[in-house]
Every structure is written in C-alpha cells, then in structure tokens.
Image (cartoon, rainbow, N blue to C red; front, side):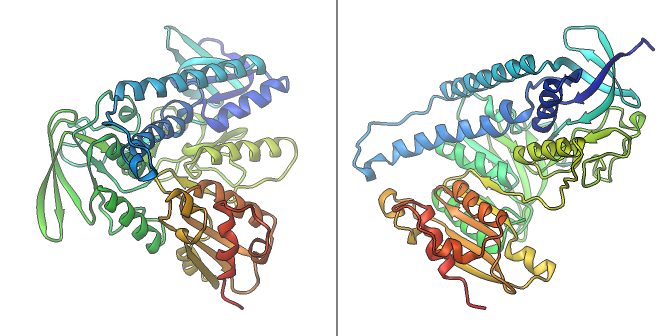
Length: 463
C-alpha cells in the first residue's frame, strides 16, 4: 500500500453536516480533506431540497396563472416550458455550487473529487474522478455519505428504469401520465407539482393513508385537498409487477381489496423511502458497525463504534432533513470544544412544501398516546384566520398539543399558507418553555397568518 497523505481531519461526503465541519475545522487551522464523489455541497443544493422547491415554485406560478381570473387578472392560455423550468433550476444549482467552492477556498479545506472507501481504520483510498488514486489518513474522521431513493423489490420495477427525485428534476417534458409510488413527503410534493405542470397524476400507496407517520386527521385533510385538486390516489395498494419502461409506456399491476387492476402510465416516480449510502465504502475495515437497516451505529454524541470516527446526517440514521444534519454539526462541534451536546433533546421540525404547506414540531396526538402522555388538544380551521380572507388560502387547520399537567406546549401541526413560517414561532415558544397563554395573549401583527395563534391557543381546554 502506498504511503498515505496525513490530515488532521478527513470527511467522507460533503453533505450539510460534513461540509460545515470541514469549513469550521479548516478555518480553525486544521488540515482538512473532504472526499466527494459528485455533488459539491451534498444533495440539498444539487438534487434534493432546494432544486425540488425551485420546481415547486415554478409549478405554483403555473397554477396561479391558470387561476388568475378569480383574483381579477385575465390571462391568456398558459403553457409550461419544462426546458425553461429545468434551466432556472440548473442556474440556481450553479450559483449554490459556486458559493460552496468559495467557502472551501476561504476555509482552507481541500475538496477531493472522487469515490472514497476505507481500506484501514481512519484511512480512505480515493479513486479520483479525473483518474488516479490518493490514499488519505486522518486523526479524526467524519462520515457523511447520505442516502438514496429505495427501489422496491417488485418484478419489473428496476427494469422499468423509474425516475427518482434526481431524474425527475432533469426531465424536459411534462409527463402525460405520471404514477408516483409512495404517498410520503417527496412523492406528494412532486405529485402536486407535476399535476400543476399539466400531468395526470396517480399516487399508489401500500398503506391505509398517505403520510403514514401523521395523525389521522392530518392525513385525511391532505388527502382531501390533493384529491379535490385532481390528484388520484390508490391506497392499500400492493404493487404486483411493472411492465414496460418509464418515459415511454408502462403498466403497474396493483392488488387492492377489490382485486387486481392495471394502471397505465407514461412515467413512474419511485418515492417509497430511502436507504443509506453505506454499502461498498469499507466500513468493516474502518471498524464502523451498521444496524440491521444499514445505517451507521452512533451514540447520542454521533460517535461511531470506531474511536475518533463520527457519522452525521442520513447515513447515521438522523431524521432525514438538511436542518438536522446541520444540527449534527453543532452537536459534534460543541463536544469537540469540551461541551456535552446530545441528539436526545433536540426538536425535529419539518415542512411539507405542498400548497398548502404542512408543518409540524414536537409531539403529535399519536405520539402522546403511544408514550402515555396526557395532553389537551386545541384545533382551529386555517380559514378562521382573517388573513385568509384576503388571499383565498383558507384550506387546512392548526392543531396544538398542550400538556394536561401544566401549560407547556408539547407540539404543533399546521396545514395552511405559511405553515413553514408559523411552526418556527411555536417552536421558539417551546424552546423557551413558555406556557401556551403567552402565545394566546401575545400582540401579533394584523392581518398575518401568525395572528391565528392567538385564537388557536384560546381553544386549549382548561385543566
């Protein structure tokens, strides 16, 4: 084996947590190398969070244009140019990659483009993208290899070459008939976006409800909203086999309670879960163990089973959100500086960027019931907020979960306009351990969506 180049810090993968560690430690004077196979900055700026929201915004503009007459603006025929949609997304990605390259340069961290795998503890061999190899070793190692879309083990599905969240953001046409496999968050965002671009969309979900982790009333409300908009659903549907090829003509055979049926489509989007990118990277040679699903085993400080090796983000089994990977960085940074931060106490907010949005933080009703926590629940239609009288965005509801033993806010869910912004307001109150009465009685700007928090918390049942 060739002599290894020695670094203070090695980072395998350049996702949110990994790149922040590299930049921080590089700027602190450490000699840092980051090994990245393809996506500079990880999936978020290239193929996931930001590109998908870029597409969703283009779809919303198309939707508003088609419905502009209800607001007093009469427009001509609306046509969607997917090549222009794609180009707008690509331009954004290029800007973001340029920003990342500038930050690498400023921090002093070296970006090594190639495919890396462990060949010994804290030692990575890199097959460089431009040819050749490098052998790198580090005193401290951080693994941030992310995850990828799972392809169900269904006869004919892999051969049909379905789109994933990566490929669907690169197509230059509007699919005539799009079938989305999976009624989770990615699937629903793309289902609505492409319906608004002009596709006929069917979502096939093997479970009894879309968004299986949500409370029943939340799932039912989103199902109704998306169905009323024109998206078709098949629930409790098992995919038996797939025939044909996505992008041409494809048939999905599904089994429901009423028997088997054939769903005809032009394109398939596979969005039924994710698997970690941990195979084939030599974790066994590094002394890093994985669990039964392939995620790297870590403790609440994100330390792996190998000394001086950490894992962050999706591959570590962290909740699969960029903001959580960023929090993984904060936890590790604090602990490297002598702190005692842990993943156990953090909140996990999230937002589904459909229209209307779905946001959540803290306990749901289902969570409270499973954990045996006694709670009080307040609920209010989003349409009761006066702001919605001005913009016609009246769909959805707000729901707060409050402790039955004291007045702490334990959770919040909202379906409605600006839900992703309002969840932050409630989360900050939760972080400050404020009693719900503080939001109930707060002076909030009129007319805003946040103003609705007052009457929502006024509905909390008395103790």
